[in-house]
Amino acid sequence: MTTVVRSWRPLFWTIPLAAVVILSAVGWKLSRQYDPPAAPERAYIRQAPVFQLHDESMKLLRLQRYIGRQKILVAFLDASEGVDHSLVAQGIRENWADFERTGGVVIGITAVRPVENRGAIERGGAFPFVLLSDLNQLEVHRQWGACDEKTDLPREGVVIVDRAGWIRFIHFAPDSLGTPAQWAKEFAQVR
Image (cartoon, rainbow, N blue to C red; front, side, top):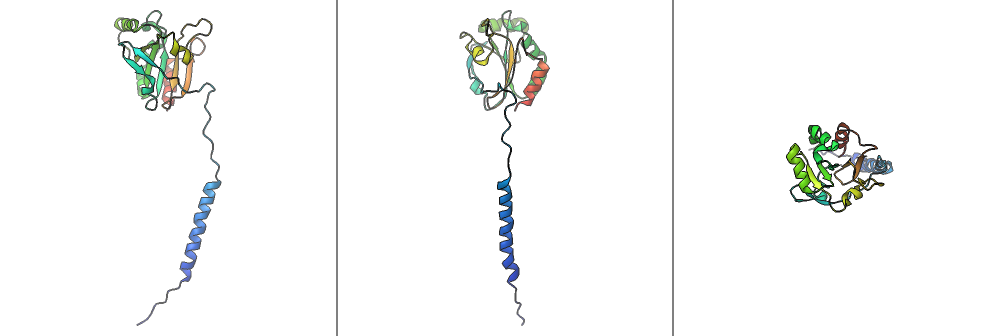
């Protein structure tokens, strides 16, 4: 019977060599510099003010319902002659397929009573988005910057909010209202 003698020398170097490889990998990982999170693209990015307003059926809708779940396009609509005459509302309605593909929710806010919004729906047909009424002395319009600073009248505009509740894009008439195609493109970009 023959006895096989195993050498202990290969095992002796295996453990220290593994330790050197592990320590080198940890050292490399710890020495890497990571870029900080990208700064907001525009200076006006801020947390979206929350609100609760009534829709055309007098149901209360809270913005908090969507924050953390969906991106939001808030459209401030000129309903002085009826929301069915608003250029922003017409633009969103005509390009609804583009907005629907983004997977977000569109909310229209007017400065008229819910009954007037219902009348516009009866005249021009239903809107593919919810219409809310800001009746508390335009409080929501002011919080979002949708009031003219000189005349204190509401102005049309579009504000795009990401899922986390941060305002990413702002367009207000007459300066930088933009087009429905531009709003849909920006809405699609926001996560």
